[in-house]
Length: 126
Image (tube, rainbow, N blue to C red; front, side, top):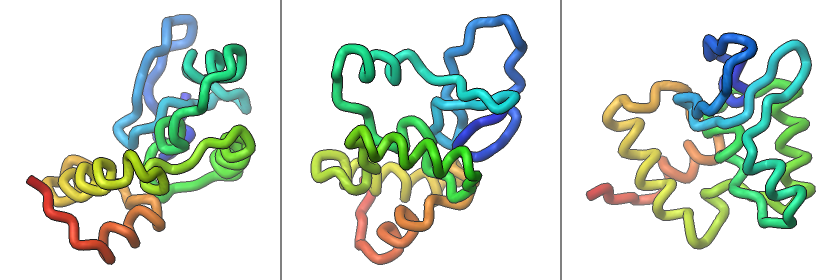
């Protein structure tokens, strides 16, 4: 099974329970052309909750695939936005992402928009 966000093989064993967040931050995976979605996705659909931010599902990696792009379009259709576009979450995600990159805790290339914002904004991490 591969991560939808960064495409790495997450080493999941078929037939076992899946509750995992990839190191890129994604919680959606795919295998044999089928998406493996977290329960929160179904709860949002069934119970009418607002969807979490897009990066909650696909992480913040710059890597992309047609499946990932299609899923992002689907999420946007439900009103989801990136956390760096959310007024309430923007500062937190920028500070955390900058700290993770500076301390080598996040080693994948960042989503281009997130990378641009971090480079063009003076963020002081405490």
